[in-house]
Length: 169
Image (cartoon, one colour):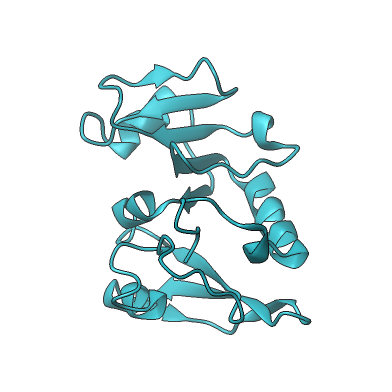
């Protein structure tokens, strides 16, 4: 789960080591992609170029409420056109969710970093991917040709890890 039943990431799912790993990765990215309800809420957030996927608009447009953001409806413009509109031609793209945004890129990821907090339970919460909890996140990633690498420990006290899932071949 990536959020509770109210679609909010609860404090019980926030760990300092995971937050630091996430923040450092986003600082290296040329572009952040997420849905309307996702946002990293960090000090550097306003500096980051981003695409916000939304069905509330048709044409690509600058988001007047979010610095450096482009509103993008994937039904009306390709990802490549959205990147060009946002003036991003190269570099790492960080896809930060939610489930529908993750799903759009499932067959394009080079690496998906899956963080896991094994002792946190969010009954009725929002799954990290479409199809979770009927399938595990591992099953979803594997079904898209990805294989897990060695996990990194982010928080020893809570056994929080992050595992790179990479495209096979």
